[in-house]
Image (cartoon, rainbow, N blue to C red; front, side, top):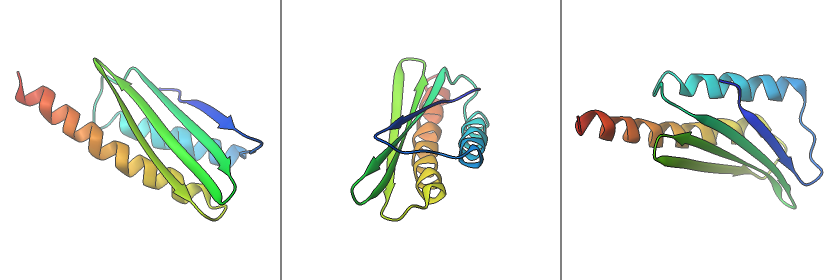
Length: 99
């Protein structure tokens, strides 16, 4: 799955960061195989950077965000990934339970 990476405000991300985000989004496929779309929004703020994962699954959209005060974008990406992972696991468990 190829993620959609959006950057708000004048923030630049390196190729290494893009690769990390792509690897992170492909990991989500291990938890639930019917993911429709994955979008990552990176926003530069006054006091740091925020990262938001928007994962679309059938009949629902999961959103998780994290922010960091320093310029360590990898830390914010990993935090947001962990949060959306928990939501995805709960969603999958509900789908399996209702069958």
